Length: 617
Image (cartoon, rainbow, N blue to C red):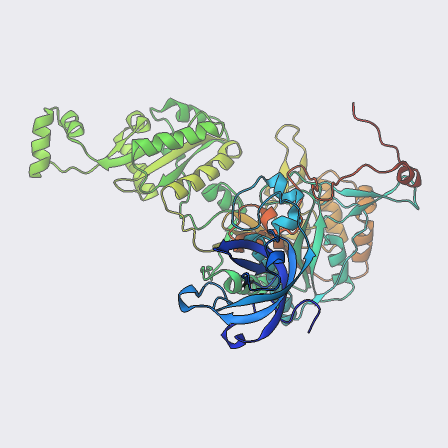
């Protein structure tokens, strides 16, 4: 028999009754039932119940074991009594009577339990990650990740893509985030960088004639942490193709991702038609370039209904150039209590508030006021049908702008009795993100958002450039290596902010899942594009000389994208924190609590690298 096991802890079933077996694993939990000791023995594959009573030759040794000890047992497989069968376990029909036992590894008192799903502080969980990973939910997340990556590889290879590896130690290249720099021992005073992405390498592969490339690529960015972003490193499905248009990229990656969602999405549907929404429309309708389309709410511009109206705050705002009023429809939100709650939400987000109108059946009070009669008379007329009730707009805004304007707003937004609308005004960039968050909150609170599906959409037509509001300086707003729509001719536009790029993102359920572009493969267009952003040719040659030089030797039109593996698995696992799907993540302060990194270098290391650490004041 094997030194440690004849079977895993998930293999035994009724067909093994009477067999002598050897199992090894962790003691998941121990139960004492009137002198009979039951142990749930766990390994990577599952759990088997083993037991010992005073007749067992090793009963006294079994009495000593504690949770998370690693043991090896020999024993006889027995059928469980029919009333004790556990249908939730593959091994639930049997149990093993222990004849012999060896302790392979004792465990000290645990800093957190493995059995059960109790919440523990994240700092404790990360410090003892090797224990945390034994817990069923986290262990399953890691296995899900492994299966997803394996599936992606097979799907990409089936589409004639070849996997190539790119360097980890390379030159610094601005990709929109901070580099992790690596000092060079052989070249004192100079630094390598960990790649933010394999961007330049994959483009050079296309120049070299490799038509279809992919890689499950590690990327390194010194970023501020968020729930959906690692502060140090992450993995992406990186791909690039030659002789393709933007639509070719979409048509290639969509079936791969749809297949993954169908395979691992636990039956949750994925929309089959992925709409293409311009960046401009996404900002208007959803207040973000990564909209959650499970929420049906679309914001609209309603400025015309407030211009010159009795609501002076909005009317005055609209007298300033570049301002507008947007409405967030709220079907089923027509109660003052809900409207006040959302107004408070806006205040908590740093705004003065959020105006609202809600629609209800016309009241007797309103009819009485309208006709100049008593309320009792109005009630009687409504009851008899002599006067139609109709719809009445309520709320402070409604009183200020009057019934004609409120009715026009209701008609534009397609709202009915029991519905509401919320309003924000000013320059869109100042309130857009808050409006987007309010849309999400309204959709969730009113039960409009279908939480049990995946909704994908492409965001296209990104502006190539953006202007700093304070300095007026123009810089790239997305990937600097993208081809402008219209090529060189487009770069002669008077206003750089009107230039669009062949750039695209893929959003799913409110997360950016993929980003990509058709690349700028012509040196003269690249020089001009960087010149608009304030980079002279000499700076382009200094930063990207290798790639520009390659483009002078015959470069094909090419493009690609990168899909975040961590975020993809996070969605599939129903997690809200990316750390729940990464084997050994950093904490919020980019610290490795388990191995205590980052650490202080030794004086010898510093001397070899010709470096000196300046103490913080």
